[in-house]
Length: 471
View 1 (tube, helix red, strand yellow):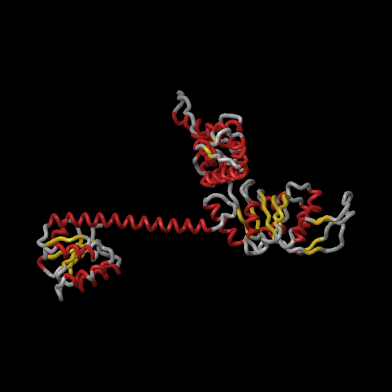
View 2 (view 1 turned 135 degrees about the vertical axis):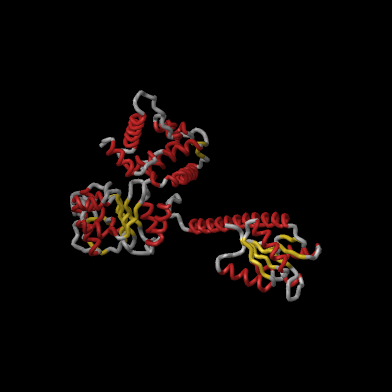
């Protein structure tokens, strides 16, 4: 779209001639003959979203014909470049015009070619300045948003992926409530960290946070661990013992891997959550408790409900607000911050000054992590422990892995097969089949992770598996 120019001059003949020059050069031109009309037309065009790109303005205009009066009004053009025209060959007036906001100064009589050059340069420079201003504004907004993000506590969750940011926001919103929280996601994705963060952000933070791993306690001991017991309740109960429910009174009880809890224990837990009281083993004295429950699992609980392995009524009692964690392969952008965080943590703990070579860092980024953050942390700490210098290199990773897979993961290159006499289409299919099989093998038949490794969608991978009958 051609630039719009407003020409303000009281000489009608000059306006007609100048308009002709500029229209021939491809510009849209509108003329006014007084200062008042010029300002009014300018404002009307701006209100209609048809703002002018440049103003050509005479200084000696009616009714006063005083250049000083016109100069005093230039600021009303609000940053649009103004080329000042005058018949007065006055250097002091030219300087004054520039000081008062004029873009440039040109004397009459006007050279048409010179005028076109000055206009083109003014428009180009003004366009660049607008772009710079827009970029500065966007940068300022970006920094403001980042500062706002940084001002939020990270709750021990390292990274800035959308998944992590959403989890942080959820933690901040639900911490002050008393609603039960259900955390679901793969192992090693920080479910206990999230639970602890919710507790610390709640009004219960001065009371205990009790974590119970339901899958780590044998089924026959889980009841006594949770409910406690009285002396003589069973063989070996030589004295009263306070249970974890009582220990958590007033605070938060975190039941990790609740999907592993035996059905019989699920019934008893449901009663506690419904009634707010329980009987310790071997006691007829009813104990009351006030706890906030946070539970977590890596199992598909709705599927377990359908199969009868988990009670439906308990599921609806514990699910409350649900937070879903994501595996590390789905938020690759968090890997480098995690690596740096764990190195700094290691350095503080062992008073070392380790860093990591870029190749080793790239290996961490390219490697699939079925164990997620926990596996990444353990691998990094193992490499740090055997590091002989102050930099973790790919050699340390090869040593702890026991093979040369570390080098392969740096470049992620695929060797090109030898050409055969088969048609090209058959060779391409054979290569696709080989790559798909290898990806599925490396990711334990997980189609989502395999598709990510191959750079295709999950549905695209499923279609290829069906086409090549690989199941």
